[in-house]
Length: 516
Image (cartoon, rainbow, N blue to C red):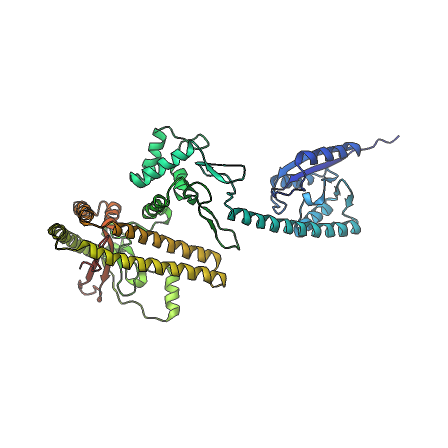
């Protein structure tokens, strides 16, 4: 009697990540398939995983395909063909592979021979049906998710400081929530930067949910997550942004959260590889005509130094308006046909020297300001009311801009990414305006005197600093005192140095005039 050779098959089991009520668990699939293999005299190797049928790069699926190329298997065994793929294109590629390797597909209900055209036709129809079912399931799940989000349900892992109740709403975690409050308090109230904050947390023995020491990355995620103010916020592709206020108990009040965002914007560090150099006047010089923020570069003063590339003979220059533009802005300006701005470049040292002189003079202005307030000759309250009206109008205009962008997205003027970027920029401006409003609302003689004294201290620090040796520190201090410096120079320095105009706008001033 001839000996019967057992078939060797690759058993493939997969559980979809989609929450399909009809989906069979992996353990149940294995039970049915191993029983089938034993009844039909098959040896088998199991390939098991959880993943979407849309992902052709599933690890176990790819491992199975590599094994099948070894020419020792007779086919693949699975419960239904949709375990392999639901997409008709992906399943068509699987059929071509199986046909080329001379393999068969075994399911619990039917055996498919890919050399048989009828079997291939039947599989094609079944694949289209599976594909349609998958699309219907995804739409149903998406609708369900949107409805749940609007009811305040939080999808995904609960953020540090929270856990979930049985309805998937966030509730405060007894210990972690206190750590979150400490983080915001140290960052906003105590003025610690994130490196100092992390050091304090670890010294106090605080740990992340994984039991590891805190890092700047971990605290940055906490400080930027709107969930801590009780808000659920989702941005789903193709849908309007969903924001649900008071969706769960807030760990941080709205004012503290907003202050944290302002501090983060002010302290945001550009990665080293993206930096083009930080100089003492970086991001301060602005053209009053075209409103271009001016850039810097190192230039050779003498041809001899350039010929031998002696970098010690280079000097820092402020570029003109056109040279300060990026490539995209230059192309757009060229396409517009408008003439270039006539503002000229200059040695940075000339402007630095002039600004330092003006800062020294401003110390006298500050003393006079304090004296006027103390004598009662300066009406702080009326000026604060005027400033408050101006800021409120500016805030309302920004709100109108935001609504225009949202409307533009709905009618197709903006792409989703463009609209999100525009709205984010407007929101950052609104936060800054709101901060100024808060300062103005609390304006009185004492607070104004305190502000002037703090400004005086910062200016004295700038004047005592070696700006050439500490350009980054000087730039940071200048940004705390100066909002912007308007620079204009009609003529170039060819043939000798030409005059220029400077107008300094100081931060936090209640009056509308700018210092000259």
